[in-house]
Image (cartoon, rainbow, N blue to C red):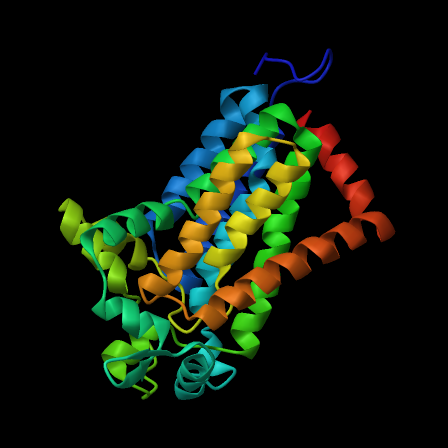
Length: 312
């Protein structure tokens, strides 16, 4: 307990140990009764406690990334409150709207873009699409880690924007529950509650690579009927926006390519309609704009400065 955060402040105290332990136990217990046991909950607690106690530097890193931890917990807890219990799920109307606006005429039929690519998929596109779709969380987290060490205030703004955009997306999830394209392919227009998540077209990447990565990922899905908006499409936009603010040069070209690749794969792999992608883009634009306004006109600016002092 002798490591120092400052000249007179101990690194951690008995009170810290008691508080962090009680928080950890409460989280595990509450999660168990709310959504059931998940090994990821233990992993989260272990990581949190480890970073808190290893050193002063890792504690600051953990406190900074607590914003993302909050997002993960909220996402996990959505399982306890399915959006389809609050509003009717949009299945057929969304499908027909997609076909009406973006339909592709092929072999005498009008197909949605998802249906078209399901027929015309190829191994190279399966591979490239799978790589892009694996980036939707690692890229934002890696970018956040980079900002943490290089531009801490921009890191805080990026992290808060990320969560803010997600919260906007969650609001739409609960006001407009929507089935993904693969649901129509496998189940038609009949609403089936408690339907399990499905890797859909991404299963072809698993088969191509002889792995089960997307099968494992989609076992963790919180809600099948949360396709609108596509937050997969929102995340790379946030990364690109803050990359441009940080003047990252050629790296922003990489972010742009990743963004376009994720947008395409969302449709190609039947996880989202084009309408979902456009809604995700809109969600990102609205979220970024609103966040910047709140930063200038509310106490959010002072909160950012306070967080900056905590992790510096």
